[in-house]
Length: 324
Image 1 (cartoon, rainbow, N blue to C red):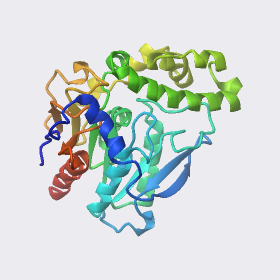
Image 2 (cartoon, rainbow, N blue to C red; image 1 turned 90 degrees about the horizontal axis):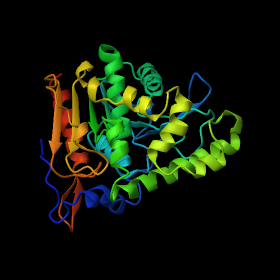
Image 3 (cartoon, one colour; image 1 turned 135 degrees about the horizontal axis):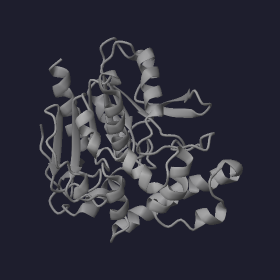
């Protein structure tokens, strides 16, 4: 596989993290959208690379789970889906609740350990495409969620293989890290988006929300958001309980599906706490690189940068498919 080499002059972790947004201001293609109603009366919005009924019997399907406050418009999301289509695969991304641009109907939302929606979606997808090989990618929060899903599902996951990119496998350590130094800028950006959605929910469902407008305005950190919103909405006894129960690091050894984990040592969202300290089973490939930032991995050159993830993710899946 093509190894990652940061673009000359672009080794800095923050440049790596931020540059993709400037490189790709518009999606690479217009997706085919679909709304999937959930059993509890809410909905999940899907983004496809092509009409699903055009998928032939043995055509691989690459499934994408995005990161915190991500969407199809996130550069990595439409980029990875486009890369799948370039391979001749069908690509589909499940938006987490409230992330497609329309607020979801119920108070509950999504988090790093919320696997019910992914499980429902994958079972539904298998009914639609009964013979096609499924592969999944989880990015950041979606990666930690996918690790939890694979650990819970094991042989029942119905996935041929999976890759997780920059997953925050130790949620408490990552919550602390993003409050430090320049990383506070990322926290501010994420919180601004999360609080906008929260504000809309408080306005439309005030009796169901665990806090009011004034308390919401006073939230300054992701830990506070998880303590006051994520935890009570999803049955946790505070942020620390949520972090303890949903961090994926300790669950890697429970996974039976072939899995690749991609981390950068300089990720400004994380610390060394996310790096496994114990031996992993042979079907789990841990890919740790020195540079790359958070879901950045910009290679090429300053004048012609390229997004390595869009090369390496299809390459690794192709190896798996070729061994079938």
